[in-house]
Image 1 (spheres, rainbow, N blue to C red):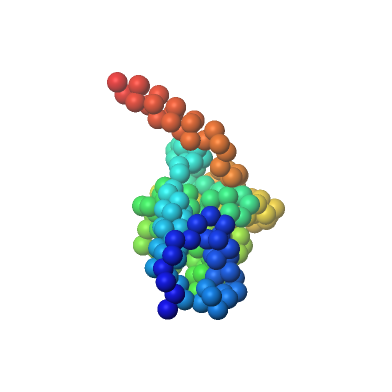
Image 2: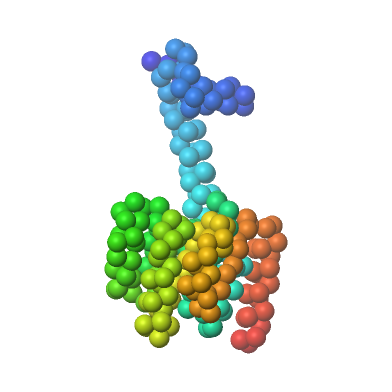
Length: 199
């Protein structure tokens, strides 16, 4: 068994690189207590950063748009934070993603069953079932616009003729970009102005 020793600086980085690439030498085959502690601390730091959600300015625009439109469409490149935004800011909405094959199949066969138990629904990756847009139109009209939808997907949604035709006059469109460095500051200023108004 290896004797626990404090690894520092470059030696730790080399060990970690070898360990994670599966290139352990015989010397590093057994993890010492110090090694495990280091890995644990690194994972804890990474996890804490991962779980820390930061608000986005676009949320204000989405909420205010619901006064006039029952359907909000959010487009944008992959990894800009669309799904993270929706799951964190609209927790009272039923969230489904059409990345899930079983839900994708349900959306093709019986889309109305997806929202029969709610008036507020988020459909992520909506472009994967183009036929769902007409069903959303019927749901909005038959409910006298009490049903509200937030649809999210890739930028090519806007190239689909059936979404612009089916949701004409019912939807407003937003394109989401990666978070800009000024966003947290602008949000803070906005929240401060609201507090001043309330006082």
